[in-house]
Image (tube, rainbow, N blue to C red; front, side):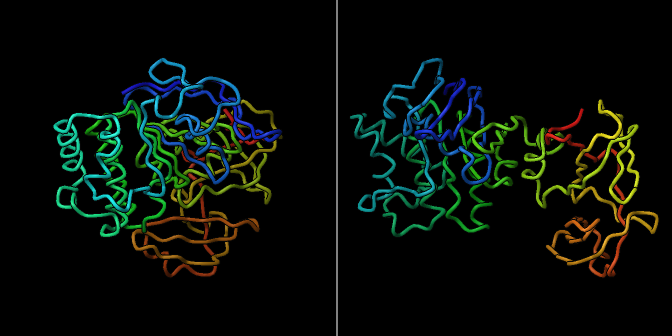
Length: 351
């Protein structure tokens, strides 16, 4: 395995800049997830690491070696795509062993590599089947097995679970995480699904508009989002936001309600801010709280999502209390100070 260093990397298509000065160091054996909405540049960055896209500026190093000008086959990486890209005329064993045969690897080594990968992925009974006789999840396991047998320096995953249904995605997430635990392989995984990012990653790289917004562990991004984009993107349901004004360790909402903060901030009194709180941290209070109109009650089985209108804005509560199913037309809410997030006028986390 190997570390991957991305230094001041840029990508442009003519006058259109799609990646801006990306700096990232991925440690040997680390599982890093690039997450963000469509068009944020995450797949472009992955393809640049793989050598499928040219680097406009900056440098990419794999195991300390500059690879900007190297052909993809010379970078010693393996890629798993959203489309399985299996050869339909080959059986599972043939698909998994094809790259090794091209390298003229000894038959005994090929057999050992295929057997080992098939065992890890539960493909032993399927080795003689062709892709058309496999389910979507089985095909994706074959695609991963084809990558594993090469024993590359790094694995690159480009939204590999997007074509699977929800239950199968959940199963495959667990298999990928277990596989990484077994192989300890350097891995970069691209997804737009923040649940996949939270459950799989050692570190998450949140991207938006071709810019890295924050890098950290899943809980770092959840507990201390660096800006409004990360705060709204990470977490489901997404964070609630309210306009406010900072004053003496509290914020004043537009209806005049004073909301105390856990600690004072280095902001001038009167500064316009955005107050954020996650739906799971909102407390349904007694009548002393802020009044909100109930617009929709959405049971999910595990919990209940209350869709409210607070100060004329959409606002959500996630609660495990099933009494919420019978919530009236109005509820009162309060915000525990330790769960509040404050963002300045530029959308950055206030310190």
